[in-house]
Amino acid sequence: MNLNANNPANLPYFPYDPDIENGMIYHFVKKKNDYFHVPMCRYVVVSKKLVNLHEDNELLELTMHTNDPNRIKKIVIGRGDLTVKRYDVLADRGVDITDKNCRDVLAYLLMMEKDSPVEYRHEKLGWDSENEGHYIFYHHKLLGEGVPSNHTDANALAPAGTLSAWVNMVKEEVLGQTAMELILAAGFSAMFVPRLQAVSGHKALFIHMVGNSSVGKTTAEMLALSAFAHPECERLFKHWINTKNALIGSLDRNFGFPMVIDESEESNLSDFSDTIYTISQGRGKERAKPDRGVRRAGRWNCTLISSGESKLPRNNNVGLSLRLIEICDATFTRSAESSDKIKRVIHENYGHPSLEMAEYLLALPDDALFEDYDACKQQLLEKIPSNHYAARAVNALAIIILAAHYANHILDLGLNIEAIEQMLAKLDSQQKRDIGMEVLEMLYQYTVTHNNQFQDAQNNSNNPMFSTNAIGTYKSIGDDVEIAVLKSELPKILSQANFSSTEVILSSWKKSGILDCEQDRYTRTRKINNLRVPMYVVKFKQTLFMSEKSA
Image 1 (cartoon, one colour):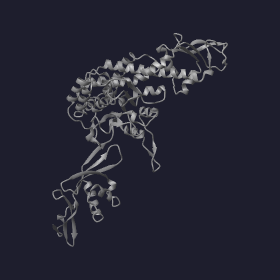
Image 2: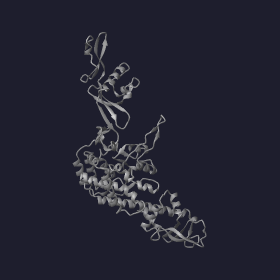
Image 3: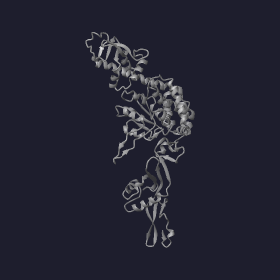
Image 4: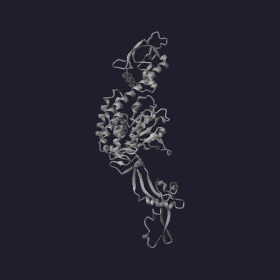
């Protein structure tokens, strides 16, 4: 094709001709007084500009022919790749660009970019209130009043199937299995953690299921995720075999979706204490960048659901017990057949429940949410024995109960909230009992290894190891043991074993009948160093620990 040079109007402003039928891009080349229609490269166009709402960068989507004339593919590149120094990046991705035509191809793509459509994308999940004080919710697309935007991994997060099929499966296979109902409610709780942070004090919830491989833990995890996305969505379903930094990084920018980490026994961590703290704090660590800057610390407000065949190894700090909810020896599915049916349904029907919940909560003011949350707290406080830490524990547990209430109201699920409350109250009580027994066994072992610090309470005045530096007394008659420790010394002993709260331990011992004390206090008067002073006194049978281990 040649154009008359005496008629410049024939030369288009855009001097290129994308021809998808022939799979080529032509450009107009001037030779003497004529312009010629000359092949430049295989077909490639800038199909859209991709603007990330959460990153200070823009990307370009190219649609192009490959060496296979029947195949068209899409790639995403950075604008910085449209330079002579970096055009090899395009060549490696399949663009027909060489040393000979690189300047022409790059000029063409830059010119085409100007008129290409813009698509906004987001990486966050869940809530954001930056839009003039109004909430928006980032899902596979942005929900609420904001710039139309799709998630960078929208295909994995987009819903499938129907809401009714998912709800019917819950009613048929989940209701009546309280542990499974609890995990489903915990999954929904991820949507409430960010909205309630100001009043609950919790930036994240951490729930760990403990049990053998046949009780349905993984099915429960998948069920919780299926309310939001594909039950094995790579963004949300992780394994403990990954490094700690990789797992913590996966939580970044999650402000309302549950995340799952499966099979804790695969982890190489010998102590999960730091991991539990980091997850519950909702913030990662700032790290240095090669250019001497500081890399942004990851942030999240969500619920993490974990599973394994044993408890997470950690130190004995009571603060950790308030940051971790462990569900031990529960059965989540009623049978293997039921588990298979749940998996079959949720792999075909997923994502819709969270969209329904989000649309409802977008219109709900925080004041109304706070009021309902306070009511859930009061209900739980009536079921959990009162102590110094009860209120803090209830702050987390009430978020799960609130989520169950809203799931019932919005989705008509029929979760048994009374049964879930009783299970949470039992878990909280069991967790405190477990700590109390651990400390008691530790104290018993301490008296054996430091027997020179304990006087014989049966023969105090004639005790051959009598010392004015004694910190307690010990008495054993048959299987019965009594240990008394000075008030000032027990906290020191507990501190050496990483138990941080003496009051929680004493409260646990008192409720278990192990602590021998006055009615209105934790102490009882005992004789030591020929003086009668208030001491902490525990009484138990030596066989107690053997039965604990064999149970």
